[in-house]
Length: 256
Image (tube, rainbow, N blue to C red; front, side):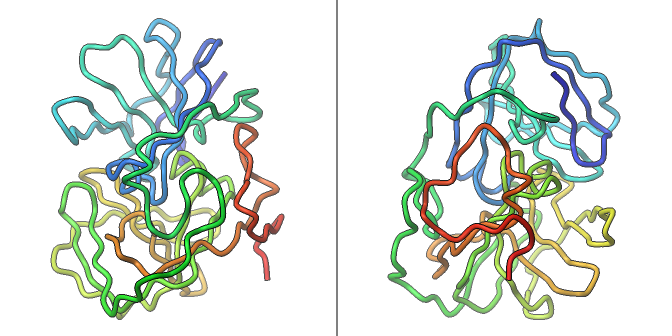
């Protein structure tokens, strides 16, 4: 089996069998992915990097390192210390995986705009006037008017590659973002959009479309958000290893 980041500067091969997929809702995974992460795993002797000129490792804690692409920001790897296994993003795999999602962890750290167990999102209980956002390492910090409002999940190939699973974002006015700290990298997509991320830790921050529309990744916003997941777009491109069980509207393409 083969996998890669969005731009191809990091690519790998793995030999089956692979562990079934585990969803992680911890704060670190939510920051880096922009929503929550989904990973499978293999021993080191069944994993081979075939291209690594874009690979950067970020040590988020003494317990593990996190690998991402310096060019496109794709969140790819989680390597715990003193273990001979590597966890990697299920969304990075090319083609059908034949995998299934077997577990979901760190529900207490999940975002307040969705239900980590997969049911309908919780009802709104707060409508903050100001939202606070940041990357995992703190090199990027910003505020913007709240509440978050409608959150849309995107299952297109680009979002699955960069997030490692699928993305969730909300529309915002870019001039309304007030940066307290800013250290950005941007990757230009094939459609002319720009994906903003932190070059230090790989946190996915925003997407600026070619037409100028702007959205912020929901996972980089601190709770309370006043947001609620409202639907799924580009489900025709979704991964084969997960099901959508929240009962929300789904569109095969961009939606209405």
